[in-house]
Length: 356
Ligand code: ATP
Ligand code: MG
Image (cartoon, rainbow, N blue to C red):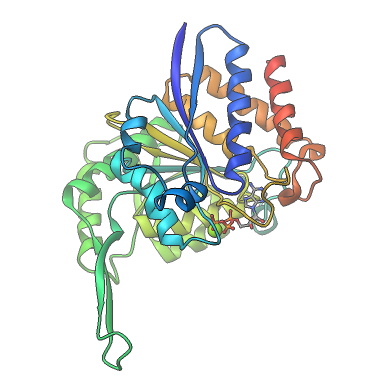
């Protein structure tokens, strides 16, 4: 029987509740078949570790993760530690250290969910947003001069490399090709940003020639945001820069019902390093420690983790189990207007798995 080594990094806040719930569900899935098992290793990195050691994770932390098959991450964020410390000190350190350059964010309206989008458009949605995860607007290049003076200047430079754009574009086209509609929307802003975004468009055109069976189009990011609300069914797979996809994918998550549902994968498509899967929500200190967190975003992230491992049957079983659970309003947590607790939702998914 195959053994998958999974690193679990709960992080902060409700991460400490949803990641153990994810492990429980994966364990139940493993117990229900004889193809594979999981070996979990937990790492107590994040805000508490920072208070004790002055860093979010140890200097040799990446070495400890390197041999893993995948990483299940909770959330990093702590009201008593500056955001840039929690973000750059843990999550981004792993994303960058392992060159997880493709951030994949599926969005669908799950059964039983009262999604805001249902109130604006009759259509259903099934999107995957691919976010460039290694450069662009978040490259960290820029600076400030003459601080506090009337002549103060500040810059954030969006850095795009040909190699970086080519690889994310190729990933986007390949993903679109693997989906039934074979439709890719390349999100851009080349009408206003006339250097990097123009190169982005040129590379999209060049890479498109490698995928003659994929229908593709360019769409300005502002128009794309509007279209997600007015004509949601006209979109399928999207590829966008770090900043654009950051914003569009939060919009997508909100339209589909709740931040608590949406999953994401930080993928190294070349499989040189482990990829990392996590719910898109943050640490949510307002509800932490009370058993109220919605674990569905984490469970869906586990589905993506299984797909990445090539366990497509197991992934489909878990997805079906969690759709059966969202369809039951008695198993909705507070963010979905219900009264269920993290443990109820987890037990519900485990129960479904035993029946499938
Ligand atoms: P961070 O600073 O780490 O981003 P945050 O406090 O901003 O964390 P978010 O996770 O971004 O919190 O979410 C905003 C709000 O949405 C939370 O305060 C919480 O009330 C709600 N929320 C987020 N995720 C969940 C979840 N999984 N279950 C229930 N409610 C959630
Ligand atoms: Mg937040």
